[in-house]
Length: 220
Image (cartoon, rainbow, N blue to C red; front, side, top):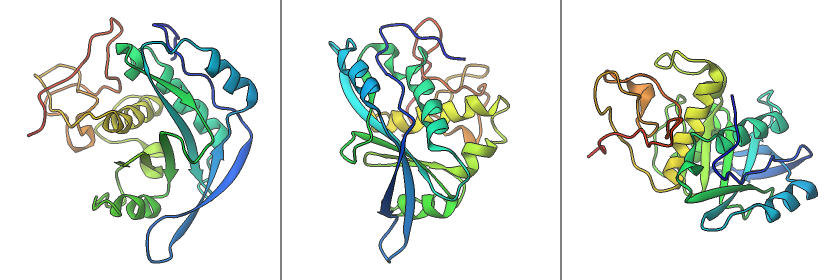
């Protein structure tokens, strides 16, 4: 599914794991996350990559313990999305570099619906046990969506995971919600596709294979 190109600079997050205990919300509720660690070789490769002219964002991938997911595997999935030539790096403006530090610019957290509700609820967002959110530097991914997809998205689960990452990372990059531009067009990745496609065709990527942005009118 993934082809490197267009000057992409992301390198693979490494496989060793470490545990992070975080407070999921006020009120004493906590969740334990495992973080995929970027090893020395990956860090050296990132340091030597050509990031000239790009804004560099470091990112880490975390998986809530007890979900049955492997942090190494999920980090590879996130890596593939962030390095895909149809992703956010296609415009030449941004580069993503893996990190295992709490000071990373972006954290992708895959968590149970209950933990997602708590993390997102801190920002006043109602995820209702069903959807994902972005809070400050955290992309909070609902385990239910990550493993089951969406009835509005007929493609393979791997593509839906790409939609999750691209949509929420898009918010981190300052993108707002968009709507369907016309019937039969690819749904913008910044569209809330889980709520309906409005005549558009399900789509997981911000750019097409020719580097054209597949956007739509902004949501008022």
